[in-house]
Length: 269
Image (cartoon, rainbow, N blue to C red; front, side, top):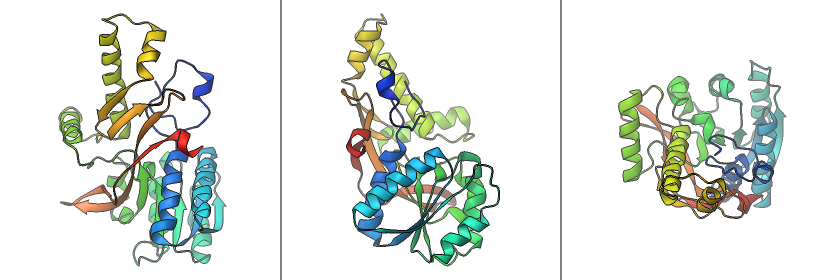
């Protein structure tokens, strides 16, 4: 069971594998269409690795397919630690928004440099991203520089459901907020729940073929919302949320912007 793999094309190679995370294409398809429909903006694109290339392809396809215009792209090498030149290029293009995809350990620095270039402080360029840029465990280090960033993701710590509130409470009782309950923990919660149910359905036995047959028809309520496994692709079907970073009671969170969209990777490939 895949907890955190986001690449397409994996599951056909492994017939006993199911995905419980998301795909980058799934997120950028939703975000690109929303950006054009709701914001009516021209965009600049900043990406830095193969996943960033996938994100760029998916976002551009959705955004331009809806009639938008990408005015520039800045692929950054993975070794870069100073992003000012790339951000300046985006600023010079004078877009209304900038889509950013960055590898894990470089996000905080890039967001702060974007702010110093005058992005958030004066509200001149909107930042759009996939949700990993502003995950629950990144936000405390980013601080107020993250305010206003709009992202697409399959989970938010403040998702408004009784099950998510229960999950947050029980997880925090164990971790004491370090780390904060996030999408990875939610995926593990779903995987363990499905595992126990598959075992119960087989009365404690574990047969690979029977387990896969069970999972291909799996549907459940998750802390992220309703989920299911697509019987044809073995990929997860789930809601994708549009969120904006806001501050609640002094804490940065990703608040939902609009109703969710029931989505699966098969719809966007």
